[in-house]
Image (tube, rainbow over all chains, first blue to last red; front, side, top):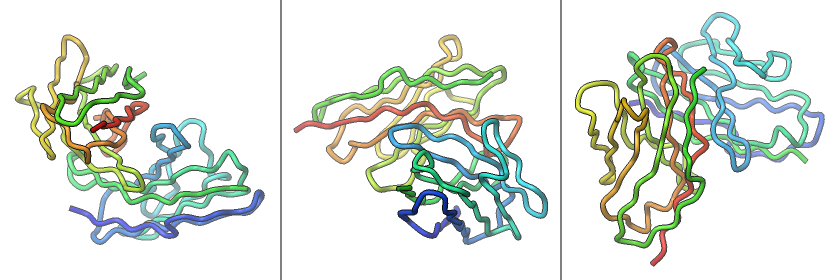
Amino acid sequence: SAVISQKPSRDICQRGTSLTIQCQVDSQVTMMFWYRQQPGQSLTLIATANQGSEATYESGFVIDKFPISRPNLTFSTLTVSNMSPEDSSIYLCSVEKGAGDQQFFGPGTRLTVL
Amino acid sequence: AQSVTQPDIHITVSEGASLELRCNYSYGATPYLFWYVQSPGQGLQLLLKYFSGDTLVQGIKGFEAEFKRSQSSFNLRKPSVHWSDAAEYFCAVGLTDSWGKFQFGAGTQVVVTP
């Protein structure tokens, strides 16, 4: 299994500022992902965090808005830049161990932008 | 393009009654299928998954799901619900060409009445 922690668990931020969310895993994992869950919505994949290289973004998400780092196999950060109220969401880190059959999600970071 | 449809946004069920949540998918290849549950303020918890083999899959908390290729469905069932089953349930397709990436359905909110 994998135990995932995220910091912060929640935050309230002002419009125009940026927030960096941390994701820490208790063991080395191959794949790490970031998802967004907007209020009352399902989960949408933002990007794949690649260790040692630039993240791979899904359609509709760009690096300038959601820069991602992954310095090693147990840690990743997601920054939500120049925030607007539309960025208010739960942001979840996810990891995959094995051949697609072991997927784990973090507890999420609840972000409110005023 | 792949998609996951959960036709029921909201279901109300009496405690002790049976529950069935519908999920239909559209995917070019053989899908990997998952059901997750998200309780209020909690992270995502995997209920069960289907990769191959027996099309009736048993999961945790007394849930089961049946994969029907001819109907492109993966419906979740529980014979007798408990008040603690009140939560949001997400069906997801795992993208076999990209391990660890999911396409989620919109979710079904389950309310359990006494």
